[in-house]
Length: 276
Length: 284
Image 1 (tube, rainbow over the protein chains, first blue to last red):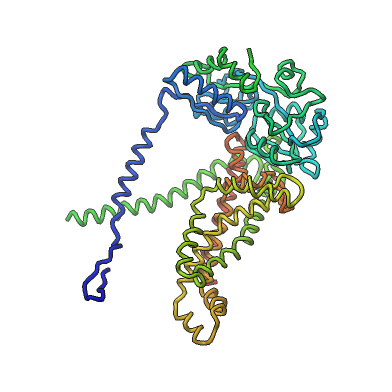
Image 2: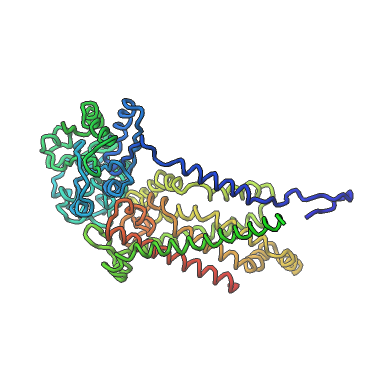
């Protein structure tokens, strides 16, 4: 389209449509070519799953990479069941789980091998200003079975969380947590919610406990590393790395590092419990 | 000769792209349906659709509470967003001086570009504690927080499409109304709004579709409890949230039940778009 201006000259419309197909083609081809190069190289270990294990795996990965710069360790979250599923389906080299394998999982994927890499307690946490400091197992069970009300805002983890699995088995004795509890998808999310809500009660890994929340004693026994280690604190579990077959190759090397003196020292520094 | 060749080549290429877009939709539908079948067979469609209890580890797979959660939060969000968006559209199309409009309109449109996780974060850190104080109990994760966040998210969609439609009303309608002695506001209310009704309906329906499909921001502010949304200060769960929170770790029937959730969502969106299309064609 062109117009004639006041002086009588023909002015061509500058917004003439250009063909955009060719640049688009080039873009698509370039994107595909780049995507093709982005695949995993042989020097990468991918681990993921439990958000309880995640901060620990991050530290392990950093130390391991410092010691062995040729290998890169990628750490993802997603929840314990995602770790088991990912490892079984081959999307993860090492799956992380804060619980043992379920019978349904060992039936479906018999070649999965579990390695205990650390131990951990599950802390029942409330807001620091909360007047309660100790509850019995039965009292905790009743609070979670009753759900949110004017006294408590109950926080639960999503289906598939290893921490939830352990909590349901050892505290709830397979009674159901009320449906009106809030469901949050990670340890970090629960901690953040408890820290910002005056009457919240939830449960998180001992490794996540800091001054922003208060860990309750169970029957007078504090949730501490010593009490978890001695077995007097009742809600404890192993943290596991899961591999397809016995750990071998780079994955085996990484797991050996985690179990070694250096790796287990990191476990203690991060507030978890060493398995040595 | 080569000119015609290029012409034909590009015509065939875009045809392939066009058909591919349609095929992708069909393939997605088939894939969701296929993965839904185990749960539909084992649990049954009725028990899933009308079951009020969701507790996968104990074998309960009812999604009625989440269907209600999605519908209630969306309706509440629209109740907040539609008046606001219409007012904003009238302001931009009729009232605002060009200089103000040149700043306000891009600002409203920029709201579309903000990632939904950022809305969720603001909702979680600012809105939830505020609502907790307002209601005096709980953590503030609630249907109300979800509806407010959703309303802000659909606001730009409804505003800009409504404004475009108000502007598209032929100028002689307006001149006619002025000639008959109508005031500016009478013209807007009695002439422009009715004339743009079709486009505004389409805008609201597009906004509804966006609200139903929103996931990340919802997970962060609604509390995700699989219960009926009986109080605006209490938590609930949406269909999208159900899938996003649990799919990573679901296996077997549980995973399949999540695909049924996706199927229901798919059908819901198709219904809404279908209604929108009919409304648009029938000159409501």
